[in-house]
Length: 71
Image (cartoon, rainbow, N blue to C red; front, top):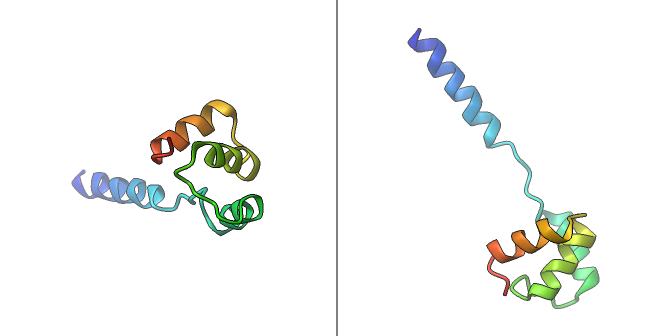
């Protein structure tokens, strides 16, 4: 029983590590196209980039930007 549980735990942990980051190179190049001197700590810029480049909604972008330290 222990080997089954250990294998299952490893599979779950490996699946969590394969998530892609929304702030990858595609989003970064999109942000630079919108704002040549993009500052992710600027709430207005962060919201614009999130909604246009990440296709986020106002609520999700606002939450995401504030969690990233934009203010």
